[in-house]
Length: 439
RNA sequence: GGGGGCGUGGUGUAGUGGCUAACAUGCGGCCCUGUCAAGGCCGAGAUCGCGGGUUCGAACCCCGUCGCUCCCGCCA
Image (cartoon, rainbow, N blue to C red; front, side, top):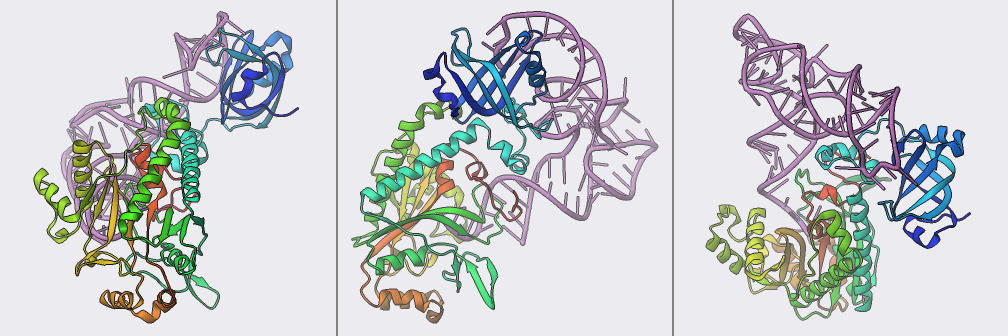
């Protein structure tokens, strides 16, 4: 017999079916037993009148919640059953894996008793069973598919760049170093150089969704040492505006898709209505952002004179939300002094770069890149980088590299904002941080 | 790397100088009922992170230490 998923049972009334799932609840009464079985598509009540089969009744009595079971029985329409108005009359039962008892914690218990995040991460295999998590990762799947659709419809190609690198590329962010045969290698902290190589390679438009690694000992609710980066790069741009315009339309497309597919579930599980953002997103230059900070009385620390700190990003985000209703805002015209060497300059001191702030959180940095070899070499030197270490990269720009731009966006940060989660550890499948390498 | 907070049964909390350390949930047993996030009764389970100090007396105050956590730095 083929397995039927619980969500499809309604179309199998009066048939005998086989279902598989986890024992959600067992109500073991004197004459009758009720089992609630859960799979990824829903839950159903299974009923067993004990005198019909005392041996089977005895087996049912030994079951523990969250055990993995295979059950056969006849589907019966029964409007008095609160769970879907149907039930399965138990015929046979196979215990695929009896759950040890007690469980480390109750994944479906009272919200008030939900264990601390760190403890749940220790028992992630059980934590993932929670309704919130099942939905969260289904949303992630839908969202990623929408992103790929959008890109492919717009002439982008998907690339998979290496995560092992021979030399530290960009300065700044810390690199993980590892033994590599007779020499050393580094884990890629960004696909930046490789996606730009695709511009030189004539692919014109590329994207990559893949892991990046940062050896920063950051202990915050929004940092990880390994995370999935959503990267894109597009050729023949006139300015960074082309990149932003593409990104905001893509995000709108993805939000719309998630809302279409999961909107009602998000309301039921997370308790809010997903809002599809309007485009274009508001844009502020750094100067304008500082004017707003002055206006709302936000005190920027002195060493952040031409920059924004996280508090400032939240303040600007809040201001934009209140004045325009937008959850998203682009900050443009960042000083070259605090940007990487490959961002194209705009005038002497600014760059054609931008950050995207969503829900007060920085989720993207992007820019038009400097594609002119001589200018790029000069900017690298200005940043104190030794050109010979990155000559392989600089060579991309010697034989006809088109003007281009792109961005990197944190997948889990985007999900954090979309589903209003307070901690990135809630929105990543398995968290990696300075103190967590397991499970 | 700097700063703040927290650490009490399996889990989540209450208790801030005098308690046999309380409650919820989970767990075990019993009772009852076509139940439905079932209900009722009983029971087991914590030397209050660890070490030292103050005090007649410490879960509670002080010092140290470990763990977790958040903020800043850095970033996505």
